[in-house]
Length: 437
View 1 (tube, rainbow, N blue to C red):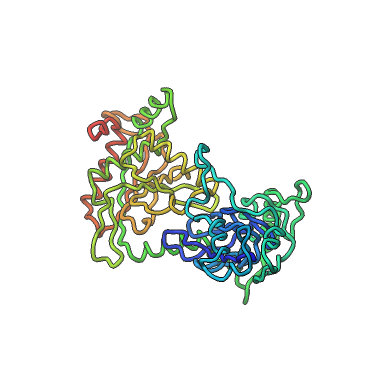
View 2: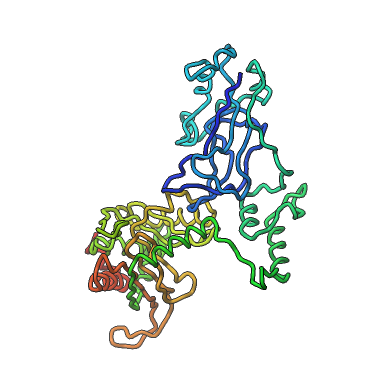
């Protein structure tokens, strides 16, 4: 008879204890393949698809859309077909033929599938029966497993981005009429519903209070992290104006040659890695109990990026070992992943220092809250033409404001000031970097 296997929400890493169900990708009674994604969940770090390591018929699924599932709690149960020639007596224990058959179908979750030789690691679907009846017919009796109702009719939405937009804006997809083919709900339909809601007067809460928007998902995680940083870290900020004319000229020279274009962010990242090699105490963090300082040998450079889910901080691993071109390529890749919502939890954690280019928002300065548990953050304002005294004469130069926020427990003002002055000197005279290479 078929063996019913229970698949639980796996450990998603980085200390995450649960995830919110965004959408189910399978229905009860559906035949799935090994490593087929069954549910899309949202953690405090990212939205990810969770693959099931069993192939067979889905007999139950647990959790509604919007409900939080704890790590280790059941997600789905799957009826797995036994090996050919096994009988009811084979399902008696872990050494039985049924268990062996289950082992044939099950694959490790790590790696998300089995790679085909010569196909560059692309996944293939293995171990799935041809139909639900094939699984049931393979056993002597029908499957006995908790089956939950399939629920309301499936809303005709294909794009997970549209579902996410509707969820974030509080739009009930079931109440919309899609403008796409066969009534498919499009992004424009959700945006029209949002516009209509904004135009209508907002309902008042109890005793005339305004409505309350709950903190959930990424916004909740960000709020908790920033609150902890503000409570625990005695942060201070210093700043300086810098003439970036020569840095911009260098960028134009580099981009005049064949090859990938070099961004201002890549040049600033290169300056940060050199500055941290000169002031290694700033690439550190204070222990959780406050009893010591951890000095990090590698620079895992975080940078602020605007994504679908709001402001995120992707991390460039081992930035100190990358050339300016390699830094630019990785920064570009992570920025695009942030825009499309494709960043993984691993790409959003483990930073040791943050570069915050808030100049892209058209502002000159900021005093940001540190990205706990990091000890320092360099902020860069917009680069704009300003009157400036250059070589004893008034001239129009491209000027930016640099700010440096640091944990006062890891260093004194002299170290922080030295770091910021070195960065400013490299911005004003980028040729200085040649001495450090």
